[in-house]
Amino acid sequence: MKVYSAVIERCAQTGLFVGYVPGFPGAHSQGETLDEVNRNLQEVIAMLLEDGEPILESEFVGVQNVAVA
Figure 1 (cartoon, rainbow, N blue to C red):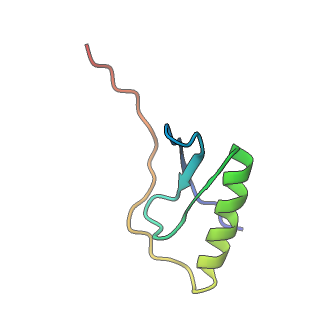
Figure 2: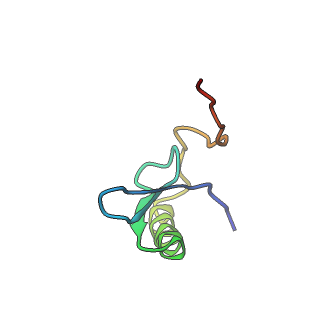
Figure 3: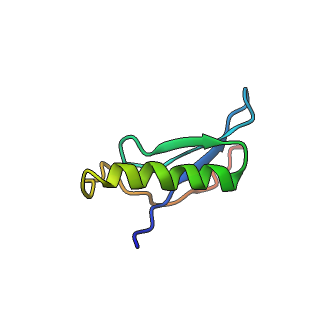
């Protein structure tokens, strides 16, 4: 089993959660709940992996808080 890190945001216009896997072209989806977006991403990634293991264009490192005075 391979684990991919996904970035999840909430769209201000639709209220939907939008997720994508950094560096993995085409690995993005949306859903009304976090569970739904996770299931959708699982399906998308599984479908993309049918063409073979991807060469990731970047690597997810993490998030940081940036303080601005």
